[in-house]
Image (tube, rainbow, N blue to C red; front, side):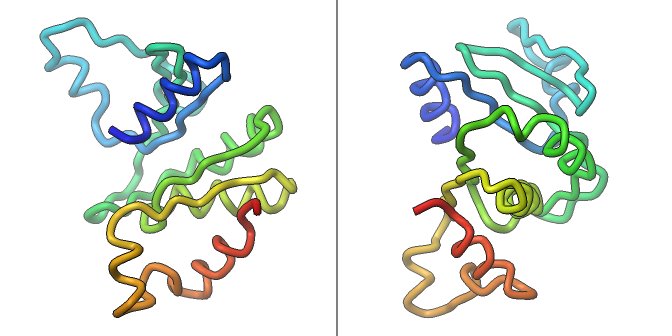
Length: 146
C-alpha cells in the first residue's frame, strides 16, 4: 500500500514513475477480478499503467516465502536503468531489491534503501537485516545515496 501511495503521489506531481516488482500471479488475479484489470505483455513480463504509474511485473521463476528469484531483473536493468534519475528500493529480503541496487552502484545511479518491516525494532536485538549473508546488507547501506 505504501508503494502505491508514494508512486501515485509522485505521478500526480508530474514525475514519471515505474514500479518494478515480482509477478506472484498477476494473470490469475486479472482473470478473477470482477472489475476490469488490464495489463499487457512487455519484453520483461507484464506491464500495467494505472493512475500515472507504470508497473512492471517480472516473471518469478522460484519463490520461497517472501523471497523470489526473477532472472529478468538483470535484463531489465541493462535495458532501462539508464533512463532513471533515482531508484527507491523497498525491502531487503527479496532478491529483486539487492539486484537493482547492485546495478545502480555499477552505473553510479543514486538509490534510497527502505528496509520495511521490523528493521528499527529488530536493530536493538539483532543485526539480521543489516548483516545479510555475504555482507550484502553492508553493500546495500553503503551504496545508497546520501
